[in-house]
Image (cartoon, rainbow, N blue to C red; front, side, top):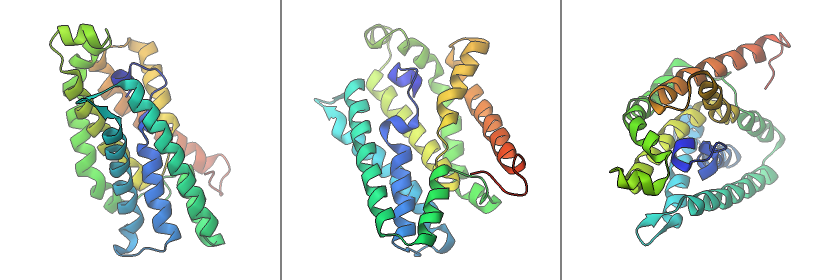
Amino acid sequence: MQGVFGNPLAEPGVIGISSGAAVGAVGAIALRLTFLGNWTVTACAFAGGLVTVAVVYAMSRSGGRTEVVTLILTGIAVTAFAGALIGLFIFFADNAQISQITFWQLGSLAQATWPKVLAVLPCALTGLLAAPFHARRLDLLALGERPARHLGVDVEQLRIALILVVALLTAAAVAVSGIVTFVGLVVPHVLRMVNGPGHRFLVPGSALGGAVALTAGDLAARTVAAPAELP
């Protein structure tokens, strides 16, 4: 996302993936949906994330192109609208549902199980395998859109492909663990300080580094205030 937008503050939440997934999950909890049993909240979160990305992208297109600024502004607007929807669901929820919604919004691996991992594994693997193939073009895009086009990069096609990759990865992750925002923003910057801005290292490195950071955070949450668990 930082490479696509050329913005060091970019992360999946910029175009509303996380907030869209949150709307899906919170809506399923508040409305007591159970059409898929224990998988209902997970499925609704995944669908909400993908639908939100589709809406943001469709609203951002003009003349067959999508400008970065328009995409970001649309994402911010949709994220704000999603926040309002979440607030509305919370208003109508009872105390038990509010507790469930709050813990889900804070993000947690407490409910992680192998069946849930296997359920989102196809989407996660697709994203993880596809992302590194775009590393060289991301390096060229770092020079700016116009130079990248002169060097043969189809910027619009690259943007569509990578937004789809990010949507698959983020919606899959949020559907299982809730929203954990710090990973996507902080980890790439730490890796840049270690090994520079080259995306051939940065993309797979961020996947591994993010996993390590999240596991460490979860380990701390489970042990710092034991036997309680910090959300």
